[in-house]
Figure (cartoon, helix red, strand yellow):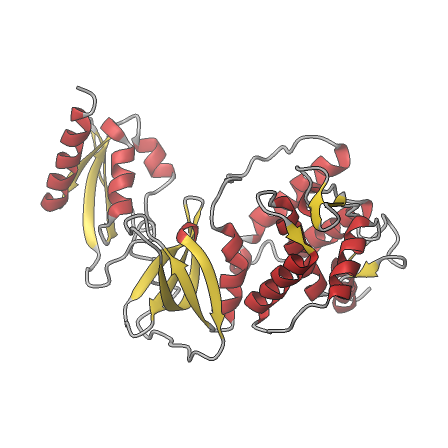
Length: 362
């Protein structure tokens, strides 16, 4: 089969889900229906409130508006059909949806979620095709991130087929807050759509409403951030997703593309996400003792890292970055394994922090 036709067939298979091994009997799921199923699932998992069918209608309408910017009400008939579809086995959900007090919907099993159901044989076939398709791009420099994706896929396929635990344990945080905003922020960034954030930083006493123009999503140490400019401000801000309380799409608000922001270079001169655009990269020198030096040598703190000299005390490294909070945290994290040598003002800051730390243990 030609590569183009094979890929087209693969895409058709990816868009459907049904009984194992039978592509002719499966039922296609359109995108809006899938959004509604996921929204209903999130609602029914939230047992802190009661969900009438009108509440589910409103929640689904809000989700579709947030994702697509389309303000179209969901009919009572549509939600009833969705609930019946989720209860059935056509999609493999078999959701234990019950009605309490003849009005409120809930899951009979408090731990149930459509995202937790086991993969079918059909799902595994599709995952296999995904893995084989991605393998074609594994050697290309533009797709170097694909290697990790393939490893995750192959490990998932192995564990499901053999009913065994995964053999690769990737870094993850199951309690990560704010991840629910990732999809809507990604779509707003791609479509260059303004949004309004209800945002409360750790330092603020109360949340505030901010109109922003999102440019880039950034992950650092298993936390997600969005780089954006505020309305009527020209500098770029970094907002943590776990501090967002609400997002409102503003399709009629003109989008401002900050000319100072280049996603390919904005984070190149820093460790982490905090950047003062007024500052310039500075040479940072530090001595790593013989025990810690091999770790730093094999996993550099920054791409600019170089070895200045090797001594009996260890190895002197240098990096060229804009000093920030994350850099100080990184250096302090090595404890007695690293001694900061330059610049002098940073040595004084680190020294002051170490003295304050020492007082905690006296």
